[in-house]
Length: 64
Image (tube, rainbow, N blue to C red; front, side, top):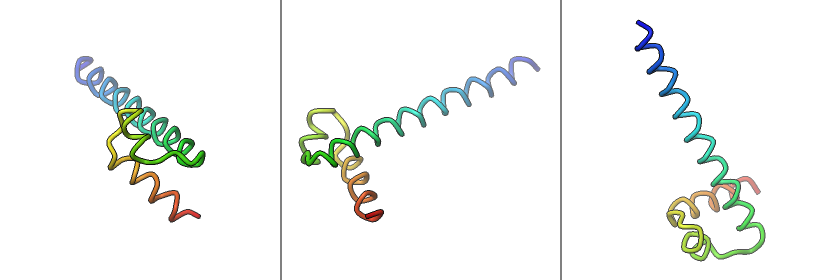
């Protein structure tokens, strides 16, 4: 069953890449928020969903 194991590996690779991209986006949003950028401006300029920017902002406030 080499086809099955290959498919599982590929799916894992894709999931890992997506998770890494999500983490990178969150780090970028955090950096912009720390610099005082407005959440709406971040969402608009970077084409992130406003809900994601607000979620990151909320998590930053809860960690403070």
